[in-house]
Image 1 (cartoon, one colour):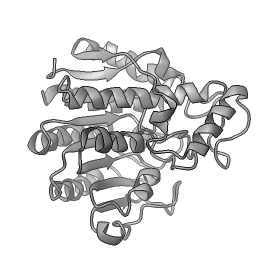
Image 2: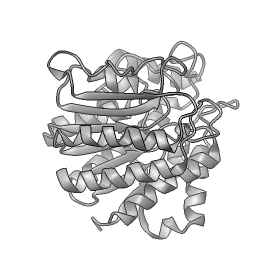
Image 3: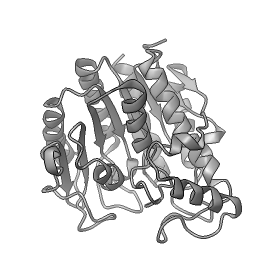
Length: 316
């Protein structure tokens, strides 16, 4: 069973989606999974049931005051959880808790040796910070997973790799002074895209300087640019001998996304997943947890994330 790739699917993951035509709608999950079934990937993975976390789990990373705000806003679903990008909706607390709970369950499964590689399509909420939602991200499942790995499993060096079109600022700035969280992030240049961060000179602070690499690329960047950037990112990650790899595979870097200006193809996502599987096998006994992240063109979501899952299956 450990050799099978795990994939979380189910209606509880579709809870996380904003209403009224918001780009991050609840249909993103099915766009991916329906295509995965068409390709027969459902017969090659173990489907895992989404799990819900508790309030204490959320405070592994988030301030208690923010968690209480999230719970309160979840009751009537009015207003915003940030400055205007991330609306509240009824049940947003529970929806967020399924994202986090599934991620924690995935970490437990990997650390217990039940699976080496797991993919969670609706996850990878990389903009939220400790005190607030941001950029369609109500919570930082990634921050919570990092804290769980450290506190519950004493994992020291964690590599976080992000190929979403948007810079993973919530993760980056939360750990910019932490030398044991190694970050490699390929994204559209912040001069042209939210959140306006992630410049090449940002390499960490204090004794963590040099443990992060930001690889901003220009609007219109294609696979040639991706592969060039990926080579640098991979060599960078190799220096740090990670014990666990987290991968945010945002599909909004694929050509045709309505919110970004990138021109990668799904091949980039498959290649990144393949190479990270090899790195995971070399350095951390295969331990790789991949998340879907962003992506607002449903065909791109389907093709990009299925390439990730196929690469994970083929890596064994």
